[in-house]
Each structure stands twice: as C-alpha cells, then as structure tokens.
Length: 366
Picture 1 (tube, rainbow, N blue to C red):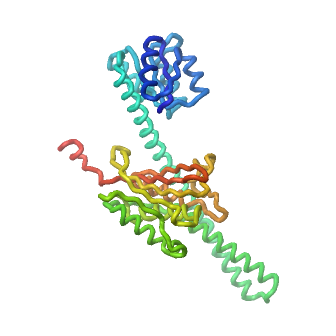
Picture 2: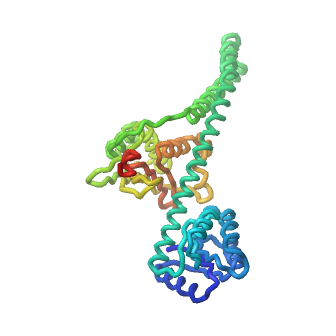
C-alpha cells in the first residue's frame, strides 16, 4: 500500500509500529537514528516518514527542518513523547505534515499516516498548480511580446514578395519568391498560435450538464468523426453529473483531448469517455472526466513534458494544444493529469468542480 520509513530509537515502539503498518499492507524500513534515516532517503523514495524527535545522534527538530527542506514533497508524521502545544507548533513550523503524541493506538497511527500522506499530496498539488499558473503567465507575456515584434517585419516581407511577383518574369526567381511567401505564411500561422496561448482568459463559470458538454465537444469534431461514421464510447452515470466551469473553455479542453486521442488511434471506437464523481480538491467536490485510448502511448520520459508549451512529439505539432487545455483546467479551479502504459492505455483525467463554491457565510454557518 505505502512505503514507509520509520525513524524511532526505541526498538519496542518501532516493532509495534512496524507490525501495525505491515498488517495494513505497508512496507516499512526501520531507521534507529538520524544518520541511517538520511542514508535511507538518499537510496530510496518513500511515501512517508514517521519521525521520532528524541534521537541519539541529532536533535529531532533540526533533522525535521533539514529533511523538510531537502525533500519538500515527502509527508512527515512526527510521533513523539513530547505531548505539549509548544512542541507541536514547533514541529509544524519546522516542516511536519502532522503530529501525534505517544502512546498511540494502531488505528490512530494508521489513520494519522493516511491523513499525512493525503494532506501533503493536496498541498503539493496546490503549490505545483500555482507555480504552473505563474509559468503560463510568464510564457504568455513572452509569446505576446515576441509575436508583436515579429508581426511588422513579416508584413513588410509579405508586401515586398508581392511587389517582386508583380515585377518578375516567370522563372526560378519567382519560384523562390513563392517559397518565401509560403514560409512567411507558416511563420504567421505560428504567431497566431502563440497569441492564442498568450491571450488572457477569465472564466465565466456556471453549472453545466456533463452529458451535454461531451455531446457539444463531439459535435465540434463532427468533420473528423463523420469520415469514419463512428464515435467514441461514452459512460456517464444514469443520474447525471454536473461541473461548475466556463462552458466554452470546458468544451475547448475536451475537444483538445479528443483531438489528441484521434491523432493517436485514428479510429474513434478506440477512444473511451467516462464521467464519474471525484474526490475533493481545495476543499471542493470534483467531477472526473476520463478520456482514454489504446494507442501507442507516451514514453515515461516524455510524460512529464506533455503539458509544457511548445513541446510536441508530432512531426507537424505546435505543442500548444495540451498546454492550453492544462492551463484552462487550472483557471477553472480544476486539474488535468496524464498517465500512459505504451501499447495499452493512455489516459487524460480532467477534474472540475461539481458545484459552485459556497458563500463564506454558509461555510461559517451564518
């Protein structure tokens, strides 16, 4: 279930914790001191660290602070004999994700571990989303400035080409001018793509029916679907589902994901669209929209790059479609993640809020 590093200098306590965690399907590595803890973390990745503050070779708070800086995505559950508010506050300030005072029951230990992992994942995702929003903003400004600077020289080149075509006699020289015109048109097309990416978008969210949203997305691809006479398979709960998002932007995300799948498999019947209730993100209940196909897939070393602007594995791809879809998902307070098992399944999971956020007064019970 989880891979856990347990730092505990008391062997009896360590054996009890190991037994509890292994009985619940976890793998556990015991480190009796700070030095071995550091060595274990250098060799292997763990889903969480359970850390005792009373260690024989290093101050527990100093170790906590160092590890939280060195491994910022690692959930750290402090489990200690220091049962006082000051120690708990100091632990959180030094980077602890959660805090338990000994003695702890098996259920409290395991529940605390699960809460620690989930809390860290949620916080890390929120921070990563914010960093990604800032990167998109910076790249958008750069693309806008670049397109503005290039547009005027391109217009001049196009005008000069037209004058040359008018004055020159047919022959090799006019062929060169025509090639130059085509290259200019290609650059202008790329400029439009850059401007589409840089253009700021302010969502106007409302409650949307998921089934209608999917149908609108497939209607937008009617030209590509008509050639095969088939459509992707859809699975939506009988009771229906909703999302709270900007309608145009939500359709744009789904169209981009479906186009990406069609590029991979050509045959629409090899694409599956599934909608289901999701968990929570930033305290809001989500709806999951899953678009999958059984095409060649994405190599693991490229998977982390697919939402990067201007990155593409397609010969004529601009590398902007998935980047825009990812940005729009974030702007609508959702997320978009991808997984792939080559030659088996590639899946894009779009998560969007199911309902409008409650007013602050309602949250506070007023």
